[in-house]
Image (cartoon, rainbow, N blue to C red; front, side, top):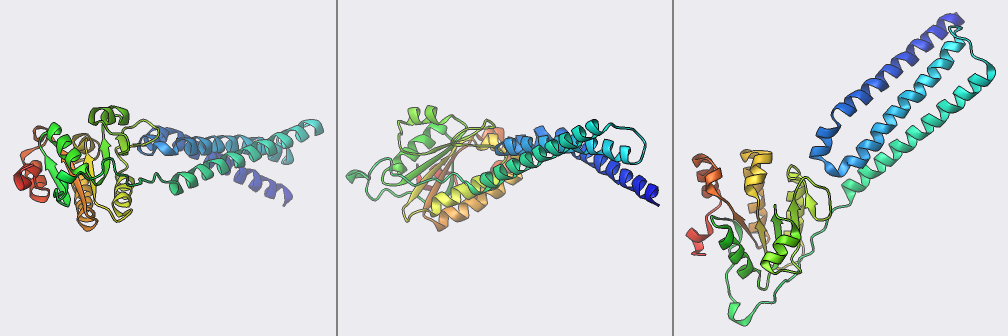
Length: 282
């Protein structure tokens, strides 16, 4: 009976070992794809991936002890003690790596970049009463979009979402206080991955809600976002953004090159988001 139980124990240990190896192999296979979509999770993923590997190795060491208990192999007392110590150390390291990975996940989820509305320019006397229409508006000229954004920025808190690095666009528009979020697959401060639409939307909504002051947002790089996420996903994103912009006295200006869109896509965009020049003569 004892021999049968030993066989069952070894079989279970072997099955657990195979599961650990399989989980590690699958996790390793999909690592690049996961990190591409969630770059902020790189450290957490790598820590937990290493944890799976060390867990599999520690279980393999303990499997040798189980085989010795069944009489399949013979180990000297010193070798057995060494293997037991090694297995425990590897298992402890695996737990530490899992814990570190979990802590990185928690901090990545809970710690969010907060956009604080800041006035770049105080409202000038000759610009008082300048109307900034609330909602989302298209602009068919990038240069014109910049000019309208700067005009509406007087006396309003501004924000720029752009494919251009922050320092470049701040230098071009001669801005110092207005925050710029860079749409890029690179990790860094004030950056966001193009596929993280829910997070970007939450960030923009938080900015519009924060403080009871009018706001203007320049959303540059729509063509790139459509390439990364598809037209349908971006259209849904913009319609939601429009609703919040109307609710929170905010103006969103989107420069776009109509040539990169199909006629159907451009017509759909114009139907939901008016062209600034056609509506307000800007």
